[in-house]
Amino acid sequence: MIAPRRFLPSVNSLLAFEAVARLGSATQAARELSLTQSAISRQLKTLEDQLGVALLGRQGRQLVLTDAGKSYVVQVRDILNKLAQASISARTNPTAGALNLAILPGFGMHWLAPRLRDFAQTHPEVTVNLSTRLHPFSFQNSPFDAAIHFGKEDWPGVGYLHLMPETVVPVCAPELLGAPLENAAEILTYPLLHLDTRPRGWSRWLRALGVTQDPP
DNA sequence: TAATTGCCGCAGACACTAAG
DNA sequence: CTTAGTGTCTGCGGCAATTA
Image (tube, rainbow, N blue to C red; front, side, top):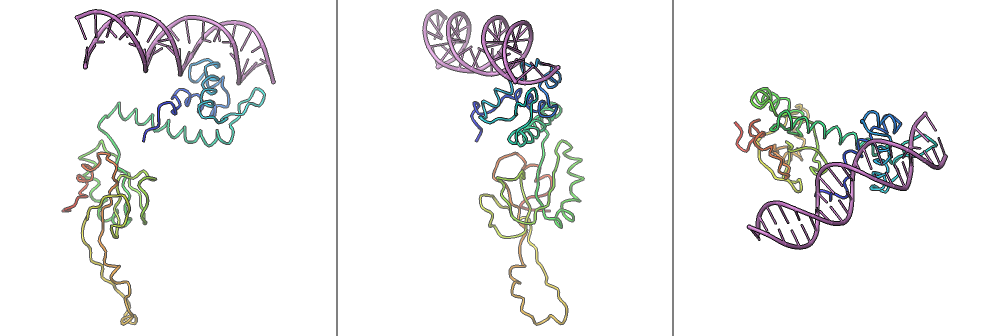
C-alpha cells in the first residue's frame, strides 16, 4: 500500500538533509544545491517536523547527526540512489528492467548460466540479478521476483510451477549397503519454480530464459 | 561565522461556482 | 456533465535581521 502523500517527505528536503549529513554544514549543502542557507535550514526543519524526530543536533554553530539521523540518512541515500538510477533508466531505456532471481547454486551453474548468454543477446535491456538461496524465504521481505528451489509446495502465499522432474540415485560405500535408507523417499524430490505473487511483468523474461512449465 | 527566523513573493494545487 | 474562471491555501525559496 502506497503511503498517503502527507506522510511522504519532499525530495528536496531529503536532498537537503543528505547533503547536510554528508558535508556537515547547511552552508556547504546550500552551495552544492544552488540554494541559500536559509532554504536548507527550512528544509531540515520541515523534514524534522514532518517526521517528529530530531535528525540533527544543534551544537552551537554545528549541525551534528543524531542517532536517528545517522540511521535515517543511510536509508535516504539508498532511496535517492535508486530514484536516480530509475530516472536515468526511464530516460534512456523506458522498457528496461531487472529480473531478480533466487536460485540454487548447482541449478544456476549447470542449467541457468548456459542460457544467460542467449538471453542477454535477445534482451539486452533486461538485467538479470542472480542470488543463491538455499532455504525458503519471504518474498514480502526480499527483492526477488522469483525463486527456483527443490522441495514441496510448502511456501505460503506464492504460486508454483513444476520446472522438471528429477530422480536422485543414492550412492554409498559397499560396507554401508544394508543400512536402512530411512529418508530415501524425501530425497526423491522435484525442482519447483516458486513465483512471487506480485505482478511485475517479469513472466515474459522467465519464458525467454527457458524457465517455463514445459522446459525444453 | 554559521544557523535560525520573520517577512515577503511566486507558483502550483485545490475547491467552488457559473456558463455552455 | 464538462469546462473555464476565480479565490484560497500551501509549499518553497530569497532577503535581512537576529542569535549563539
